[in-house]
Image 1 (cartoon, rainbow, N blue to C red):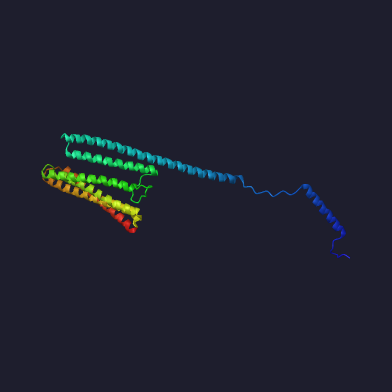
Image 2: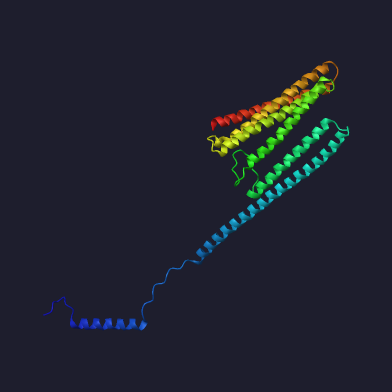
Length: 309
């Protein structure tokens, strides 16, 4: 006897017929298709493509701008080198003419010395511009002359430039020393006034002060390249050396202007010079006094930065 929960024979036959019908329909439709993969929307591809193209466009524009800047820097260096070459040629031609006039007794020794100084300065400037051009050719950037500038490959353009300046200033200093000797001899012989002698002495002292600066800069440069602990302060130390020199130069000019003003004032009281001469000398004295004060302030400012660093 069947349990009341067992399915009847009629129910089983009916269920079997329904299952058979389902199987026949599935066979007639074939095997089910595989599920379709999700496709990225078209706008996403467009966004990625535009970003890539935009980035490459920016990089290309930056490259073009860099190359254009490099060309302009090189052109500027070439123009300066060419101008320096022409000035040197002109100065040498002028020196040749002055020397010929001096040998024939027409030009004075002072004219000859001035022409020699101009020619030497032009020659040094040409060498410096040629050095700049060579550095620009290697780097594509403006030449750097700070004592903490890096080497360029196997070249130390900073030291080379300082050496050129040192040689030039040494020649100028020697020439200024000779000129002062001649001026003193003429002054002692009453063939020259005191103002001219003092002006010559001032010119000598100014050159000597600039000449004394270069060895200090070379020492800073050597220390920087050797990894001196003061290396990070090299630029500030260089600024201080230059500010110290400027202060000393300003003091020399102030002292000379003060002395000239005193001499002119005595002559004015004696009725030899006019009030206009006195005012001019007083104005120069005031101007160089102000220049000295500004140089002192700049030196103090740099000292404060060094102390704080």
